[in-house]
Amino acid sequence: MVVARSFYQLLSFDSFVKSDGEMKRLSLLFVLMSSMRKKKNYKQVFKAVKDLLPDQPKVEEFVVDFEAGIWCALRKVFPDQSTKG
Image 1 (spheres, helix red, strand yellow):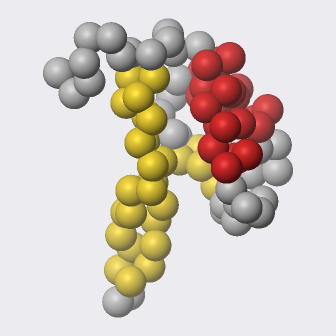
Image 2 (cartoon, rainbow, N blue to C red; image 1 turned 120 degrees about the horizontal axis):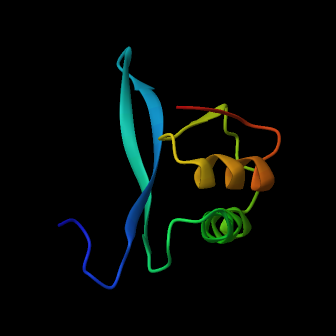
């Protein structure tokens, strides 16, 4: 088990960066979600993260799993960024 029973999911925010000619994954943020995996819950998390940033994030695209709630929430909060899975 990765998260305690009181949590439903560990959501991670990672970035792919180029270093020494190689692409590497850099973990930026972890969120323990205590609510069910629904669009409204993901939307709250994404909006809170976006509100904490000083500027509009410079995101080329989001790479996520095939969970419909995540995809819908990303389109609502970050409408100008593409998403792939």
